[in-house]
Image (cartoon, rainbow, N blue to C red; front, side, top):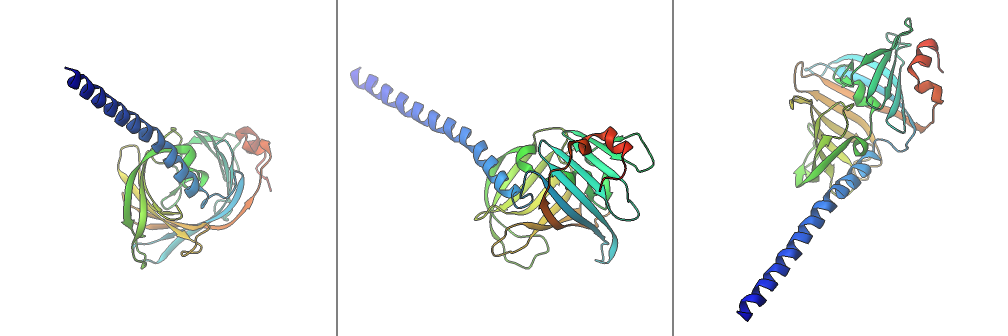
Length: 262
């Protein structure tokens, strides 16, 4: 009987140790994913308040150019962004994002129009694609594991990557789920599968870095449509600089009554 009791106590101790270890691992994983996402975000957004001059180009399935537009994006803290459309065909139009709410402002209207983050700008680039640049703030997820991955259409050999599976943490995001691959060594974004609310694969994205051997920032995001026209959309980041916009610019009624900002 004494031996049985000793064995039971040892088994109980081992079981408790394993349970605590599993609990600690489960608690540690979200923090690890959050750290990975923050590291990946720094390649896209180098400051909490940023002005990003952006060019969106559409290419037909045969590779020939179709359309091109220019945008000035002010990405600010607290899930706030303002997009000014710069091309002559859209001059004066604006998109404002405040948390989960999006508005489109037309130059000849004093009534802001509610839109969704899936509202198309050009090609397969939606308002959410350029107005939101933080995975760490918008998603939670798990680390699926380590895989070898290659950029779609790239000639470079596959590299060790970390595969993250992300789920939306708030309703105002463009994609309900993202399968994201980061470089294992530096945690730069490599590619992503982007799923809409119906869990259909809407787009595949790949990220072009400034220096492939020693990357410091994303210079281009290439989107491949997977639902309809299968065209390619390239979102190029022409310039970034730190900038805090006046608080009045983040008010839809002010923007409607003051079409000229700059």
